[in-house]
Amino acid sequence: MRGALERGLTSLGLALTATQTEQLLEYLALFAKWNRAYNLSAIRDVEQMLSKHLLDSLSVAHLISGQRLIDIGTGGGLPGIPLAIAYPDKHLALLDSVGKKTRFLFQVQQSLGLSNIEVVHSRVEQYQPSQLYQGVISRAFSSLCNMTSSCQHLLANDGKFFAMKGLFPEDELSALQKTYRVDAVHPLQVPDLSEQRCLVVISRER
Image (cartoon, rainbow, N blue to C red; front, side, top):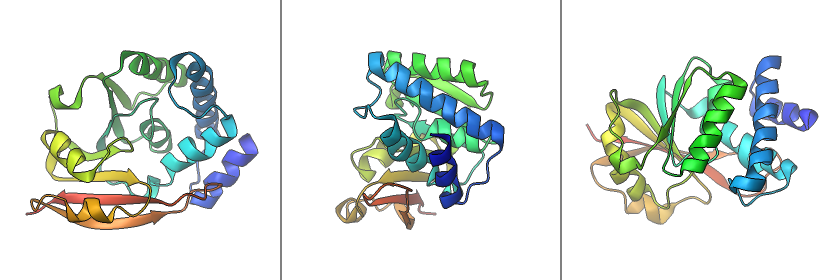
């Protein structure tokens, strides 16, 4: 598994330390273990978890901006945990409304010693942070409109939405509210994954 991870990191252009690589492997092991009881993911095969969860999350690492970010509907910590490991200087809040998932995230935080994450057990509509975020990222939302309308109260004026999607979301882009603009749609190349993936970057119209 280590070799596959290291090859994936090289393919993504990520030069992580030995400690960071160990943290990613430990996270993957914890995810696989807790998944059996907590149903964090429908994927049960660890090799598929590596490509479809870990490397998929890290495929956006070079495209994410801002020091203070929040991962909405993070589930088992995707993409937030891999990004927090890759960027220990960034603060990442991990929000989910399901208690068993946030309990898992607290366990990961403790086991890996991640001081740059904050676990939030809340519905997104009810969460009122003391400080707004420079970036809102998610793999969980069904539509871009849903993401922007549900999370607009979390984003600083100059912040950006980072929506991880599968196929190019043409219908979703055309339906986006006029108060937002699409800055970029980045095609993603995920090692050992044939499915199309992209990252949509959205900001408020000035």
